Length: 240
Image (cartoon, rainbow, N blue to C red):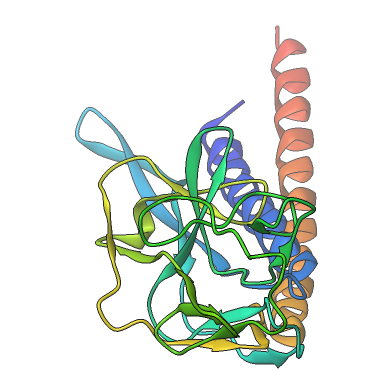
């Protein structure tokens, strides 16, 4: 494979990666608390003996867009949306996960849990147990959970210094592998609502269509270059 084919192929690979990411964003446009993914690319210049041979497109990293999503009313007493910075803490397989998805429910032992059944943690890192005799559950703006008898628990809402260091998990939450989380000082949550994804489906679909058009065009160019290479090799083989 010659340098021109390498150059065009690297661009095609980058387009394919962005296509897949955009398709993932669209697929999660209705996922509660989902945050848009983006990609950065870097142009790598190749040189031989101080001469520029060509530049290659290199996937430089993935980043999260943590802009606030809209609020969707559910009227479910256990649903909570975070206004501003912060993440709910949940526990899964002995590890703390962070999420913006506040679509919670109560399991058969009274624990407050996520869609996937993971316990939601309180401000002390323990599970939140809803008393069986709770006639009504109130969740105040500061995350205090109460029933008719008084305070039950405090939602463990935390923030991280650099959200870009988070690693996304299968539950559409995150784990923090590098660094520590700290409690949010001024918690602001809203009961009976969940945060929608911050994906604009129409905008992403337009992007996907354009990316697909470019990808197909680049693929045709790669094929043409490869055919030219083959013809050149065949012509050279016929030389005396």
